[in-house]
Length: 221
Image (cartoon, rainbow, N blue to C red; front, side):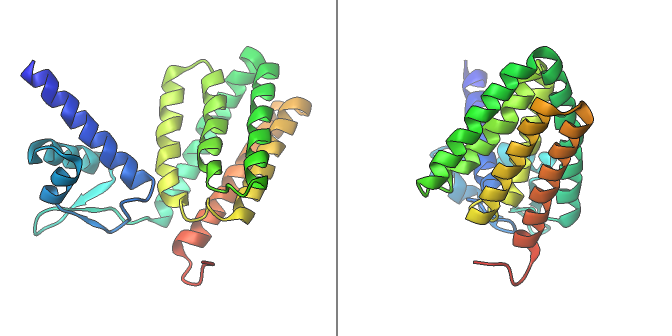
């Protein structure tokens, strides 16, 4: 019972810290203090230390020579790699989803786009973060592969850490919605090659927005 309880606390601490890092609440290059994190979450230092080790192994934290950890800075190469991997993985998901139930997939994605546009008209730009995740998650879910769904979700969460600055800008949201529309139109009209091309263009645009907002010294505020 004690071991089980300890594992539950460790997983909860890991999940909380991971989500804070990926969502940008804990910023890149920010130093993490074990005692302070433990006090904020309301746990002992042991599960926090274990969570730090797990997050270091995952590549989100970097151990400091003098002790402690820091959130790994965002790197251009990593952004480019994740975008390339996502294109391959989500391309496979699209192919499998089309083979299983292409028309139902199209209906679900159109509903998502409609909700995105409604929330944008209401001025709720931040709602796109969750709706964008649902759009891509729908594709992965319709593929019928739990492993693919898990991998795609993990990559998408990593991408959010880099994308958080650009995804709240209205012009970028509108551009992303147009990218979603292009994917759906290709699903409805074109061969697989056109669908994959639309997906790649959408992810390429996301990459350009990330690089512009995360690395440009004169990026818009």
